[in-house]
Length: 332
Image (cartoon, rainbow, N blue to C red; front, side, top):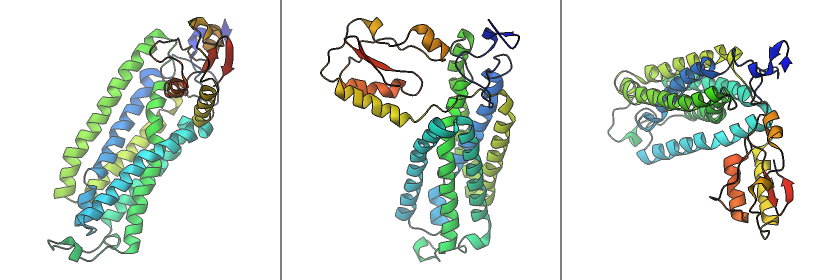
C-alpha cells in the first residue's frame, strides 16, 4: 500500500507523527539523528542541576549566613520539590500539551530560573556583605528581598525541571519505532548512551564546577551552568524538524482509577486459564494503533491486588483489558 506516493513501510508504524500531526518518514526523522540533540541536552542539564545541588549547603552557610541545620532543611525541601514536580509535568504532557511542548515551555522556565539564580549570586545588592566570623549566625543575615530572589530562582528551577525530567527520556524513546526491528534494537543502545550522558554531566559538576565555586567564585560557578543550559536549550530546538511525536492521550491517573475500580469489582471472579481470552482486540487492531498486545504471564496472577499493580507496567502505552470467564471490560 502507498501513501502520498510512498510505501506505508516508509513511515513510522508506532503512531508517532510530526508537530502538525502528520505521519513521519523513518528515513528523515527519529533514530540517532534526532537523539544526538537529546544527549547533548542531558549532559548540560545534569551539569546544571548537580552544579547547584552539590554545593548548595555551602552557599547558604557561607554567603547567606544560615546555620547548618537551617541550610540543610532548605536544601532538602528544594530537592524534594525537584522530585515531586515531575508528576505534574508528566500529567500535563500526557493529558494536555504533549511531551514536546511541555518540554519546550519547561526548558524556558528552567533557563529563566538559572539566569535569575546566577544574578542572585553575582550582584552585591542581592546577597549579604562578606563575613569572616567562624560562627556564621553572628554575621549579617540576608534580607527578605535577597532571600526571595534566591529561593524564587531555585523554585522556578524546580518547576522547569518538573516538565523536563519526565519527558526528555520518553521523547528519546519515541524516536525509535518498536515495529522496526533495527530501530527497536537501537533503542536499547540509546538508553546506554543516555545514562552515559548523565554520568558525564554529573562528573563535570562534582569536579570542575565544585572547584570553581570553592576557589574562584560563585558567579562563575553558576554562570557556566547557565551558559551550558542555554546551549542545551538551543540544541534541543535545533533538532525539532527531526523529532517524532506522540499525541496527548489523556490523563494516566484516569487509567489507574479504571484499573483499580475494575479490579475491586471483579475481585471474586476466577481468571480464565486460556490466555487467548485475556485480550479484547485482535493483533491487527493493536498494530493499526501503533500499540502492542500484552501477553499473559504467570508471574502476576489476577487478583484485586495484582490487577492494581499491573497498571504501573502498562497503563501509559498499551490498551489493557481484564477478561474473566469470557466477560470483558475495556479499561484503557
